[in-house]
Length: 121
Image (cartoon, rainbow, N blue to C red):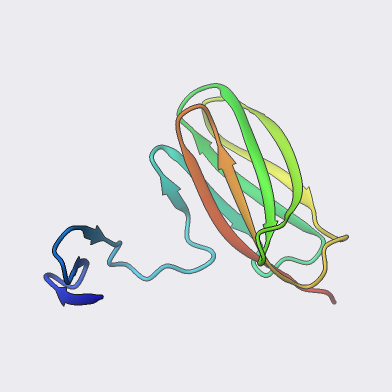
């Protein structure tokens, strides 16, 4: 049970056994998200036929990508040969039903996840 907000950004559990730090800035589905050094941004959100996956890699590597639906089912798996720096991968999503989806990128050291919405016109 959460019982203490020490600075508006840090949440401390009732048992004081863990501290959970959160980003104080509002997070939207167009906000770049990252864990470690691999950065990920999806656009446009909501998307119709093609989703642009923009990533920033810290080194030349193979990035593994997985697309999940809202229930956690895997819909698509692919690899991207990434050079150091910013790159873009267009993903055709016209066969996806309308709904909420997640893209997870993994390289040899880091992982990043972002959410997108597929809409039909």
